[in-house]
Image 1 (cartoon, one colour):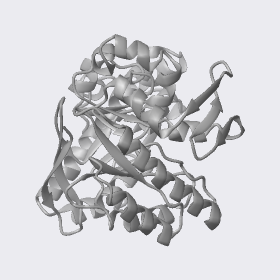
Image 2 (cartoon, one colour):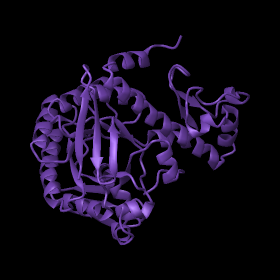
Image 3 (cartoon, one colour):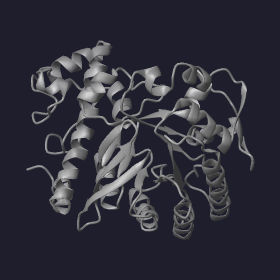
Length: 372
């Protein structure tokens, strides 16, 4: 049920396509808002549709612990449980489990860990992760992998990557739903030969799509882009490519130029809850407005004069939003969340237009130009 249709490739290598799922077809490049616990924080499904979201991401680890996959299956699956009619991608839970550090133990069979909620002992394996995702009923399920920390030495990265390959095969073999597609994940740390070998190995398996994992974990940007280029060079052209956990405009531009179709990140919603608005660099050179700053006390302009999000087109001003944030009013967080997610949806839309007209190179150059 998951199919990627390549529409056009720009001279830079940037791709425009369509991701077909059981719950709709969506233009790529696309950014997926993160609904960790079956909700994108502060927003309703209707608001997400209004701002242009097509696929959202939910978190297997969190839903496995609470309210449990069994309860969501009982409710008719994740789409019905959260009243979302479009696409859903569920991650495997691997990244969250490995983030627990000393609270988890890795073996060939899987990972034993302590719940961050109540400290109870839990276990996730490739088979259990896929079983949970099948009960959730997501359109796209992710293979269970090990996210290699940065920095990591070569021997550890090699052993971990080889285990990820074995887990990928087990994940694929555990999938039984015909209406769901499983994506494999490329790992390899920050080593070119391991990245190439991993991409080739994962590409040789018949996954519905392919993700590049283990990047944006603290490494320098230049190294991240180098490893991304190495990874995508080995992936097939006829399947969707997903860069995991990336959500700032510069990362989206560089990812798209390296052949990436899909992105997700908590960044736009998390920073909104901390009072930060994402804006075009021509509006603010840093690309963000810190709304708690006193400079906005008497600023009666919209967040971004060229933005058509709910907040900007309805005249909510910087001064008003600053007041809401400082007063800890939830509406302020909602306005910034709506704005930030709209910004990234619109940004990916404009990237697609540039690709279709063979002017992505100009789009990228214009983005990096300093404001006049």
